[in-house]
Amino acid sequence: MRINRTTRALGALTLTAALALTAAACGNDDASTATSSEVSSTEHNDADVEFASNMLQHHAQALSMVDLTIDRTLDPEVQQLAEQIREAQAPEIETFTDWLTDWDEEVPETMRDHVNSGHDMDDMGDSMDEENMPGMMTSDDMAALEDASDADFQTMWLEMMVEHHEGAIEMAKTEQSDGQYKDAVDLAGDIVTSQSAEVETMKGLLS
Image 1 (cartoon, one colour):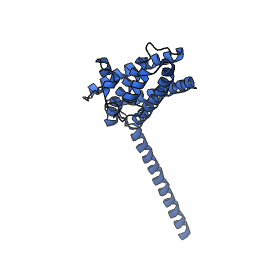
Image 2 (cartoon, one colour):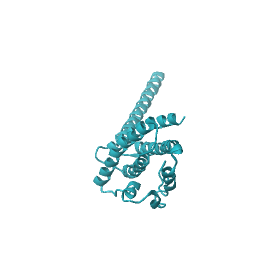
Image 3 (cartoon, helix red, strand yellow):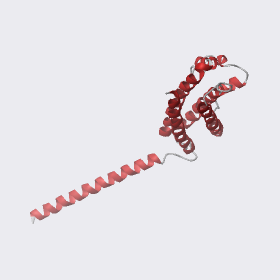
Image 4 (cartoon, helix red, strand yellow):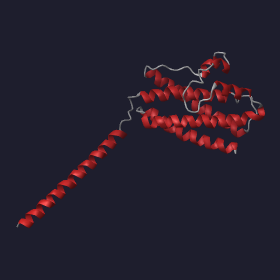
């Protein structure tokens, strides 16, 4: 009888331990679900603000690089890519501006604000050089691109745009990891997908 009682007691302990492990596993699943559900259709966090603010400036510089292709002799594939970049990023700039306005956040100045005000790229001084954003060109880089000969321009433009896109992809991946506002996280995913494809296209054109 003593042996039976001991066996039953050990069985009960084993069952209790198994139930505890199951409960712990369920608890971990709940924690994982909670983390994945932190994305909100209404709320935003600091990462969203940084993403919108920085990407607005980043896109603006890309459009300024596209503007420099006007009146240049380019391969048709490169000209098509430049227009593709304009068509994608111009509306996104408006989206970033709308988000920052809705969140009562400052909408930053961009290099396009300066150029459109009649100043050339040298007038930007060190302001763009100090931007700590991946892939951003300095004012010297932009001036060099603007002054490049027709023979050098296309290759320089593609190389610079690859670097610029890779910086945007890095920023977008950070938003995917840290952002809260669903629309911003979704747009970051779109940027990763579209600009990764464009990088591959540009690398192909350079080879």
